[in-house]
Image (tube, rainbow, N blue to C red; front, side):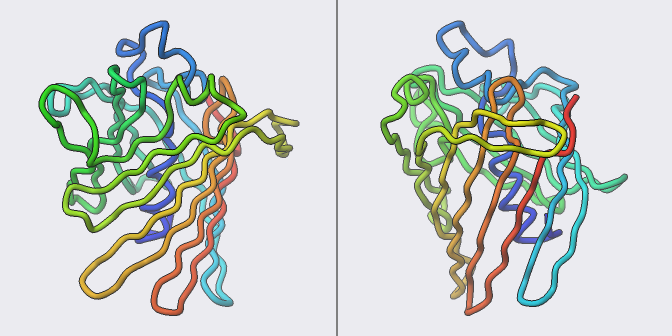
Length: 230
């Protein structure tokens, strides 16, 4: 996404449900259906980014490249490419104790950052918790999770707000789960406010995402829409 803040924000939620199929039990099948993660699967998006009066558009592809182990967790590894350029790598794992999806780490511009740390034998806060089988079953009730990076620089709340019909070109009308991620990210004296809304369709995954980033009086808006998936 931007080859900077906007791009980093978007791909954090592209893998909003679980990682390796081998790590999913029958009880955890609920969230996995909203983001199928077999190695080799790919999703291509049209991304429009607007800052002030300037708008630019790129097409990029996210694919499940392999399964890695991070801190003893089997994780699906997502690689984001625009043409031949590797933009970002994200790792996602299942916290089987809670049936929740967590993001252990991400790598941007060659810099590896840890988002989720182990506490004893269970993965939990700090970290980004995205979706759980219990939350899916609880619909239409609102369900939320707080998250924070280990250094405290980034924190927020992910809320499962319900279901919504979404009609997309080439895909027709889709029945989607909707997630709202609201948080802040600080770097030095600068703090950015981030609001991200994500639409997930069963059997497909993330079909649309809209993000607004506000910092220092400037606002960047982005919208990623699914073009095709394989």
